[in-house]
Structures are given as C-alpha cells and as structure tokens.
Length: 555
Ligand code: ACM
Image (cartoon, rainbow, N blue to C red; front, top):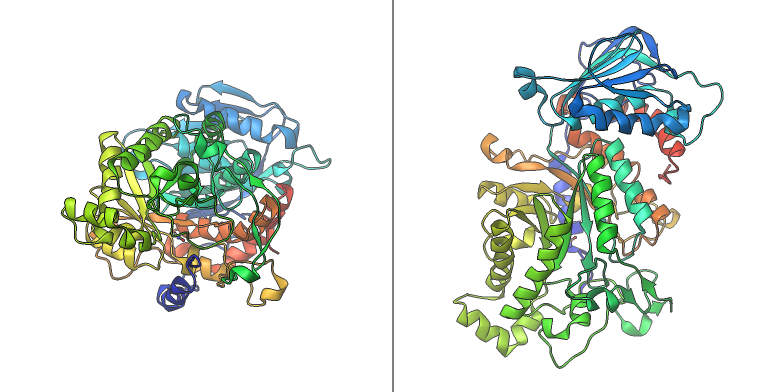
C-alpha cells in the first residue's frame, strides 16, 4: 500500500504556494466607501454601488417574474417562507408595480453582457428589480438579495422582532469562472442523502455550480448499478475500518471492528441530481478506473489482474495495488456502468478518475504484458491511456465529455478530455498548452482535507498538510505562464473533500467551512475586487448565516 498523495504532492504544494500568491491589498479603489456590515455579500459582487434608504419586504410583497423565471421566483418565495412567515404571491408578469420583486428577462446586447449566470440587482425604497438573461442569473440575484436581508432570513421559523429591510443598492455581477466546484468523497466514508443535499444547498448559496460526486473507491462502491448488483450487494460495505493516524506496518494497525456501509439507489441519485439542478448546480459523477478499483474487483474478481486472489473491500487508507485488467470484457463492463450513469446524470461531464493507478500488477502480469504488445503500446502508461481512451470514445459517442485527474496525461491524452490538475498546476498547464480544457484542483490551495492550523494537536486528525483560509483566498487559478488563448482553457477550480479522516457530516462541515466561502469568492469575483481584509469583514456577518443554517464551520 502506498499512502494517498503523501508526501509527494505536499512537497509540490509548498513549492507552488509562493508562486500562486496574488496581491491581497490590490483592491483599494476610489469607489464610494461600502459598509461591509450592511453589504456583506459573499462572494463579493463585481460592481456594488450603495444608495440611501432601504426596501422593506412584507407579507404584501409579491414577485412578478418573467415566464422564464417563475420557477426561480417560487423557489425564492418558498426559501424565505419559514423565516418570514410570509407566503409571497408569485405572478407570471414582469410589470413594474410598487412593493414588487420584479424578475425581468433581458434581451439583445444585455444578454451577452450578463451571460449565462450574470445579473443586475436594483434595490430601491419602493421595490426590487432583477435583470438577467437566464434563470441562473435571476437565481443568483435572489441569493444576493437574501444576503442583503437580516441573517434571520436563513432560519427555519420566524424570529420575533425582525424587520425585513434590504439596503438600497445597485449591483452588477457575473462570475469570473464557469466551473466553480466542490468535490465530495462519499466512498471512504458514506455521507447520507440528506447531508449531500445540505452540502449542495450551501454551495448554491455561495453561487457555486459544480458538485463533483466521488462515488467509487477501493474502500467502497456507492452507486447502484442494476446490471451488476454485486457492486453494491457486496462492495457498499467494509467489515471494519482503520482507526487513528496512518501506519504502514500491518502489525501496528488498529481497527474499529464496525461494519461501514452505504450506497445511493438510482432513485436517490435522481433525487439529488434534481435537487442540485433546482439550484443551478451540475452534478459531475466520478467512477474511478483503472485504479482505485479494489471494491469493484472485490465484487467481480474477473475484473482484476490477480485472478488467483480474492480480495475484499479495502479497510485501510492509501492506494490499493488491485487494478482493473485491460480485457475487452472489463472495458465493456465499465462502459455498461457508464451507460447507466449517463441515464442518471444529464450533465455534459463524466469523471473517470485515472489517478494513482499503481502499475505493479500490470508489470508483473504476463497477460497484461502481452495485451500491451498486442495493442501496439509501449508501456503501462500507454495502456492506462488506452483504457481511458476507450471510455473517452464511448462518452464522446454518447454526447458527453470525459474528465480525469492529471495522470491521464501520462500516456497521451484522450481526445476531448478535460484535465483536473491536482498534483500542483503543472498538469493543468500542460493540458491547456495541448488545447485541452482544465479544472484546477491543486493540493496546495484546494485540498480541504488538510489541516486548518499549524497546531495539529488542537485539530481533529486529518490526512496532513496545512491549508488555512488566507491561502485558499490567495489562490490564482490561471497560471501566469499561459497565453491568453491557453488561459481560456482554464474553466475554473474546485475544492476537494477526501474523507479518509472525515467520518461524518459535522466533521465534513468543519473542514469545508469557512474555506469554501473563500474559494467561492476566488472563483466568482474579479481579481481586483478580491481583498482579504474586506472579505474577513463580510465574513463576520456571513458566519452568522452559517450559524443559522447549522453549519459546523471552524471558528
Ligand atoms: C487524488 O487526490 N488522488 C486525486
């Protein structure tokens, strides 16, 4: 066993972090002073001009929505109903009237200016007007409006004595990046459906739009596949789990003696995908191959290289050396799995992993070696690329796009592949230069499983590393070495929440927040508007929202 991403990428992370720092004090402009306690919007809007006075939301306020935005209007009305006790009328009309929240759909040149996710928001003493070209923009405008209202708007029942005042303001806002993501590993520790929804809901409140759902691993298979029931019948459970810090000596390993189980039925998946879609979040499923596949091999030993060995679901952390073989039947099996995945996830991107595929079993296997020769390949790296390429061709034929961790570069990139750069930024740079899209996910700035303090003794046990919130905030996803054309391949970035040492939802929230709030601003707000001091001032209000939402953020 090899420990997952220790210490190699931690060392890389240290080297990368100084190069990636952006000027944190660069955003002092001659704009009117904005009271960050009154306008505590996170992520920070691109243009925010305060005005005098406020709008008061009452039971008589109604929502006038363009027909394209009525669903957004209803969601807003439902979302604030518990806290306010108001049952706002939502009317399909964008006519102006007093005491109305208007959702106006713009046309013509404004459509280009606002794009798929941008909006304008005007709060005046008589009403609120939202302008957007698409529903996502209208949704984000109303998320901003909620942040302008008292923090009690995030509670689930009316708190007495609250006046629902929003300060008058003009806001113009569009995101810097189209991929504003967060990953969640539900394989090392299963996370219940209710929590997955809460995680998604919190992302939406931060205007994030990609949920990368890491569904399969050595330590558990978590998605129902009808054609291959043993994947969940057998491999959604492990009999026990390693406790305490990483120890490689099996004689010194201590286990909890408890079964750990869980998976999502296809109906659970549909429910979560729909829940995310209502919040303008695309779910990106990840099915790992050819490595990180011990659970799959435990269910179907014929997928493995060592047919003489039966192996169970992994009970310790680190990377298993059990790897898929490269038979046509195994390629067909994984394509069958993807075929079902495609029916559940309508989004354009399907992640096939590709990271940390240990090649020792491939090197030792005469069958694999003759397969490499028969396919006219040079080595095991090229075999991995061939394997991933089979998935890429399949996905392209089905109108989807393959995403893989940066190891998919090693034996040649599959056509159309999008690269997720985790071992620093170099993989992303190489992919962008090769004309491929890139999502930045470097350990140095986006691995939220790392410690939040140098004083580890005061923190819950974590995998290692050190990633405080200010380092997250300083992340610059576009490397300076890219030309403008290459830089356009950087779709954005995302947080990683690996769960070897994260056992439940409350600990997950502790690792995710407030760092996720910082990353949300990195991915939405233009660089000159990023200012850590100003961000921290707004955070003092924002944490009250997290409190109201019962988020166990690190204080
Ligand atoms: C990874 O952390 N193995 C992508």
